[in-house]
Image 1 (cartoon, rainbow, N blue to C red):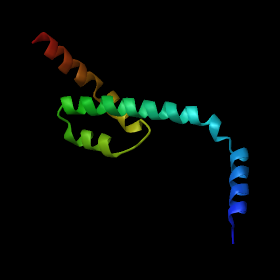
Image 2 (image 1 turned 90 degrees about the horizontal axis):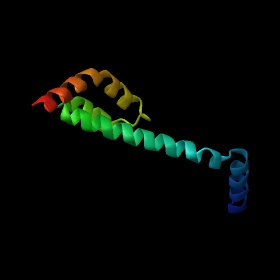
Image 3 (image 1 turned 90 degrees about the vertical axis):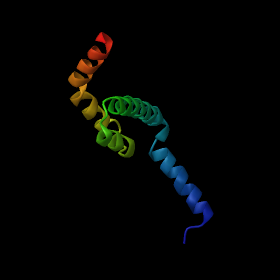
Image 4 (image 1 turned 180 degrees about the horizontal axis):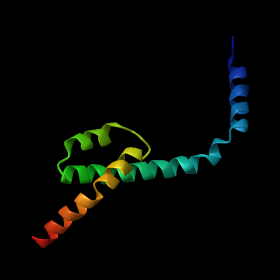
Length: 88
């Protein structure tokens, strides 16, 4: 049975073997990138009346992969919609 002292020693060992402090900036950048892409994708899906995409972007947490797919697949259509709104 593991007691508290063994638990602390194991946690200290894990902390020295896996240097999590070096990974934290990478995780923060991934989080900010995912949040930004998801926000832009959801905004565009709402403006284009794409409810299915909006729900998928809202539910699926994919580190920016699904928003990138949506944003790249709707780039041309979004450009034409934005240009037609400016013309009116």
